[in-house]
Image (cartoon, rainbow, N blue to C red; front, side, top):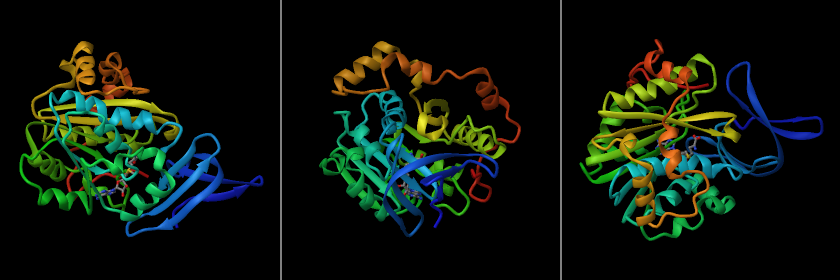
Length: 315
Ligand code: SAM
């Protein structure tokens, strides 16, 4: 099992490897669940500094301590970019926290959440109910168990206003490898309405390894090869040990055209309150890159448009 638990100094540790030479270790207070599903190893650990944590294939997905940073930043910039998001597609997002954030917007009439792994959902409902906070009981949410890619192949054209891709990282042999390619984003484009918007998590820009940088910049280039508006943004997630990248793709609306007043007005009109991280003045600054990342996005030579027959993966 790829759950990377080791004993040392009388304690149990979870090790997340970032390359052959580096990683992050976390002391484990309690193992709540360990198992293997159709497609990945699953662990739920109570970590000393981060609280309850979901780990898939040896990679942290979210922790109680800071899951709200990741999920607010993933969802709200994209939701406010669309003037009236009613039909929402979520691919992945097994904890239910992405759906939770989407459902805060009162414009939303239906959310279809497609996750490949029924066991992840079952385990999250049982051990991590504070991550979904009732979202699974919201009548606007329908859960579909299946591969997000196959779902899109049969999805109704132009049906969704917005789509959130909250899948696991592209790892070799992992279930999400083909959720980051041009062919995949073409399917996302097809299922979106004329002014549709999408967002995907896009791995980390701050692990300075070639495969990681190639991957995050390539996801940006790949979304940009399909959507006329592609914007990269990032936020620091403490438990991920670095900054995390996101890519928004849009057919017509540009998140950078939104003033703080418009963001405030959209959040208020939709009844979105009680956020802990995202706010109207942060909106534009999320998209403002330090010089090194800006330069990577503009000209990292190894980055390329990812295709099904030549995807990119992280360690
Ligand atoms: N925050 C996350 C991260 O850092 O990678 C993503 C979290 S979420 C738990 C990832 C979900 O993607 C999992 O529940 C997994 O089962 C799902 N997933 C992976 N591959 C998928 C696929 N091909 N179709 C649908 N869901 C998929």
